[in-house]
Length: 234
Image (cartoon, rainbow, N blue to C red):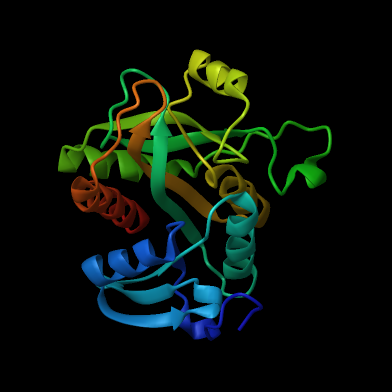
């Protein structure tokens, strides 16, 4: 057990999928895994362990924002020996050719700051995905026929952004989408020698104002989960 995770060491698999929403973790576990067991519910942050095609996997909520993600990823790595961590979540599209419902596989994650900024000091460290996971995710997405984009994303500190100039520069420099967690996940994976990836569903679009209808979210998010699982165990 840790401060934020009530599971026993043997309850957590070496492969962990990290949606921000604990109820999305519940939905994904119950939808895609067999022999599912609830392994954590401390502070309402749900975690489940089960099997996908015979492979043991944990799906655990990470909360909103990099500080929350950092807590859970640190404990999963340090105390539960998680080796592969894949963020699954929603993001906002930032390029005209990226449509709502598309999947973005994040090669890099730009940020204004992260919980690791104090360690890096004056260094502008460039966090990136594990190439093996990224390549496997692209292959899985192509096999499913899911519209997919691979490239850089922007991990923002805030949801209610009052710096439109930053978004303008992200768009100008080809950033595909914006979310709030991946950059710190990539930092932590690099620090501890683990594999990390972010597979994201575009749920809304900053340029067009389009948004994914609630009735369509489950199918679109399902593609993302299947791609992440296939990537983890290829």
